[in-house]
Figure 1 (cartoon, rainbow, N blue to C red):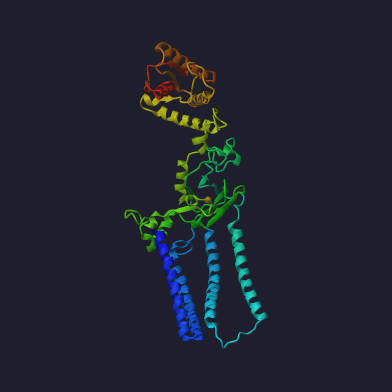
Figure 2: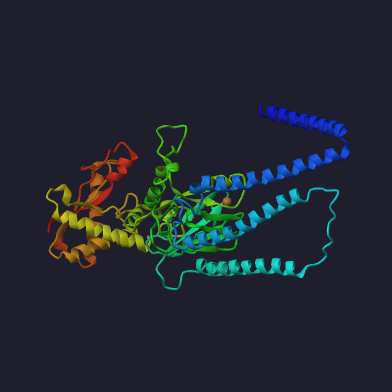
Length: 498
Ligand SMILES: [Cu+2]
């Protein structure tokens, strides 16, 4: 349908053009060749002048009309520290180019009008004029020098790397057709080593899991940053050219495969503050979704965004991530909700070089968790509260042989018993109900004794520990299900006295 209409319009325009041509030819015959040409020239000259006026007015009016939607004007002041300098550079350049623009447009159309064909006028022959040449060489050269020098000074300031030892946050963004992958350093504040040859479906950045710095790195779905803190973004690409663009922060840098780039900036406005800025302008009170009368106004729906500013393929438009700038406290809170990518996705998978081994950080974490749990159990009022499951103490199937990793948890028990020198405990062994009750009882006895032996050989006085095997008599879970049976095969300690 649309194509048909367009075709009809083109056809109509063609017919009109032919008709106008015919009319002109006809009037030429009536008026005589010369007079008709003079009239036509006059008409076209005047029309050019009107076109010029209309065009310049259109430029000024549209600029004024859309001012509050443009970066650098109205509510869109820079949200980063260096952005003001770039905006000012932009304005100065616009000032000079606007002058040149208006002068050349006026000259173009005015000359076309003034020097329209006139049989009585003879052109002058001007081969050379030093004054004119000097003027139009020197003026642009001086203006260009001024712009370039200011630009260079700004470039050096904006592109400066973080000075050694200065406090900052470093994150990484990797462009991929068609997505931005994001990486944060985790609690250690350091991004781990990576190499493109390590990239797999499970390891999008190609991180080296033997590098401890990688183990706490996390990969969030949005960029969250605290206000007024310097950020350094490592920018890379995995396939084609992309461009890391944070328009509201005047941050823009190519992401080039095989060539790491970076950008350093300091956000100075939080998302909430920016929304309030927008709220002051009527334009931003319109519905964010014109189709949905329930949708929030534009100012409220606003979010900073990361875009790709390089046309990188068919899905280019979808390379968008939300950027949230928050207070320092909110940022810290958000950090605590982010989980290590390694722990969530790699740990104990086939790609994990530490599969089956305990990591130092896990040992530390378990030890902290245990000492907290024992504190709680010691102050518990009820019997159940005094029981502490030793969830990492494991035995080989059907035997009382402790697995190698069990010693870490048992060492935590030893530490606790040494810390609370008069504390007495019961070590309880439990099984599921598979097999006959008598042998289950024997097995649970043997397992409790194995723990007892470990503790006593590690310097705990035997009288403080009572090993008991309960067999399958005290199930915690449902023995009818595999999960329930797993829950029932367990070792616990119970605090008998503090
Ligand atoms: Cu892209």
